[in-house]
Amino acid sequence: MSATDLLRLSAAELGEKVRAKETTSVEAAGAYLDRIAEVEGDVHAYLHLDRETALAQARAVDERIAAGEDPGPLAGVPVAHKDVFTTEDMPTTAASKILADWRPPYDATVTARLRRAGTVILGKTNMDEFAMGSSTENSAFGATRNPWDLDRIPGGSSGGSSAAVAAFEAPLATGTDTGGSIRQPAAVCGLVGAKPTYGGSSRYGLIAFASSLDTPGPIARNVLDAALLHEAFSGHDPRDSTSVDAPVPPVVEAARRADVAGLRVGVVRELGGEGYQAGVQQRFQESVELLESLGAKVVEVSCPSFDAALAAYYLIAPSECSSNLARFDAMRYGLRVGDDGSRSAEEVMSLTRAEGFGPEVKRRIILGTYALSSGYYDAYYGSAQQVRTLIKRDFDAAFENVDVLVSPTTPTTAFPIGERTGDPMSMYLADLCTIPSNLAGNAALSVPCGLAPEDGLPVGLQIMAPALADDRTYRVGAAVEAALAERRGGPLLSENAYAV
Image 1 (tube, one colour):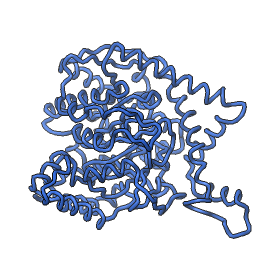
Image 2: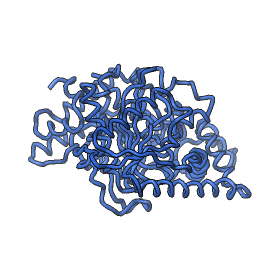
Image 3: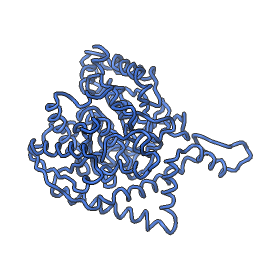
Image 4: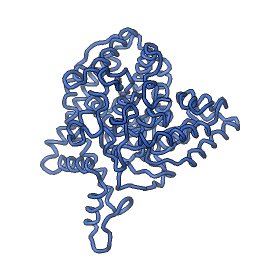
């Protein structure tokens, strides 16, 4: 097969051909590594690449297949890995100067399970520093660009992962979703991105931002590929105290089923209207009508507490980051500044954190520390947790009447690089639709639903389901994907300027 043919295959198709010996994992990895060399100067999706290690992983898969083993559906398939998961054979920086060139002594659970599944980790992808951002402009190592329009953001914080998949620099990628950081970049890059149920995928070895919110998940070009990756690295992990001791929902079976006949779909009244781009609203409404035409029963649902979700999130998440990032103290690992023998430990710590953290990380640490301080804890952090409870109750009430909820994934399409960097509040609004599911801990997925007519950029449809009902999101997403592909005569991503 030619390199172009290999790049065009879905992850599922590529895995099948590798196992059938119609191609090799080495050929697939080589095709993607060559593609990265061709376009990475424009996109800047990766922070670290190791060609020799990737090819060695690929050879090991080919040897297992030659020996008669069946290593699984994703064996030999390349993956781009977000640089927030520890990897013992590559640096893990969380896109921060304070961890530049740090090499962990162990693999994250997600990393270890990717290796066990036989995937080939090509490298580590760029992100907003410590996963704090919605545009991947907060990386200490430079911004990533959206392959649909290089002057626009690829979303964040998993923007490097979404850009890599959209630019055909990888067929699959990992991400983490704290307030929408998988679904939002997937939406603006025309991809599928899933936030599993909180605790359904392990946080062990994931550099923490907000521990009660962080959730590893997949980014892919289609729903089935996302489901295969979701299944490969999810499941109970005794090393993660928040891990759910329950079977992984049947997401692959649901993605193959792709049927919504008889499902009850709720349209969230609060996630739409004023402030939403006209083209986003149009494509969302068309998706709702499509679901009805496929046999779903659609009703409007009100979740009034969602209006306070953004405010609650931007108290809870910074408070948790203030606590989690205290470990970066210049004493144990990472950057150390001013340690010349004349300064106290406190002075070294202050100098290191001042130089090592970027502006957005500092902003959130300060905000979180203030919210947790004596005299303000109950008024801010405590109140935000009460709102979180109300949001969960709204979800619970809604799911008594419907099987899934739907909304736009983002209020707008990808915005220009630099447009919101001076206006944090405007930046935070990019996560308006995605945050409620993080606060409640339920499952959610974004699937492409067309291009906005005013700018020709991708729009995402968000599908939300109860905790541990992740399979419902894949079932609905796959049905929408198949119907839209039939109407368009091909996948949405084929219109991307960096399509192969």
